[in-house]
Amino acid sequence: MNRKFIISILGMLISVFSQADQPRGSNLHIWSENDDVYVLHSHVTRAWTVENSDLRIIRKDDGKVIFNAKTTPFTKIVPVEGGAYFAGLSDLQAGSMPHGYNFALFDSMGNFISRVYVSRESGYCEKVRQSVSQSIGWFSRNPKIKLDRENGEITNIVVSPYYADSKPCYLPVGDHLIKLRSESQGSS
Image 1 (cartoon, rainbow, N blue to C red):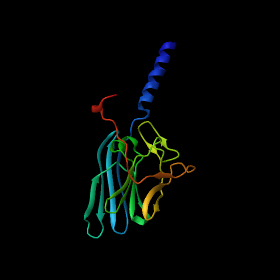
Image 2: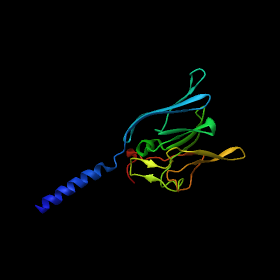
Image 3: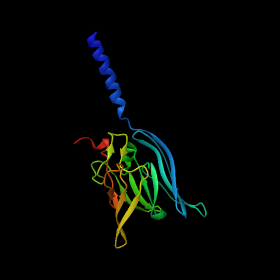
Image 4: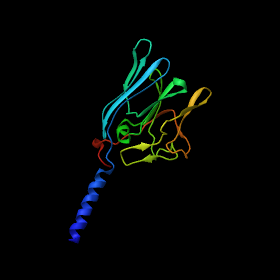
C-alpha cells in the first residue's frame, strides 16, 4: 500500500511539473497614436507558434496605410517623445524568441531605430523575471521610455524596469537580435 501511494504521488507531481511552464498563447489587438497616425498591432500566438503578428501605421487624415509588416508579438505599444517615436514591448517569451527581439523602437513612418532581445542573460536590465519558456517580465506595467541623445543622435533607450526597486533598462540602438538554432543545424 505504501508503494502504491508513493507511485501515485510521483505520477501527480510529474503531471503537474510537465504542465507548469507551457508557453502561453495570446490573441491581442492593441494600438497607440499621435496627432498624425494610428499605430495598430495584432497577433495570435499558440505556444512557440506565431500564427499572425503584424504592425500597421495608418495616416489619420486619409486612412492610408503607410507601413505594414510582420513583427514580433508585442503586448504593449507606447508613444515616445509625444508620438515622434513608438516602442513595441513584449512579455511573451516563447512568441518573441523566433523573431529575435522583444523590444522595438520605430518612428511614425515605420523605420526601425532599435530591435533588441531583453532577457536575464542580455545584461540590459538589472533584474528580469523569466520563466523557462512562458513569459519574461522586464518592463513596468505602464512603461516609461526616454531617449538619451548625444549630438542630436539617439545613443540609448531607457525603459522603466519590471521591478520598482531596480535600475532602468538601457537598450542600445540598432539590431541586437537573438538567433534560435534550427533543428536542421543539428547538435554540435
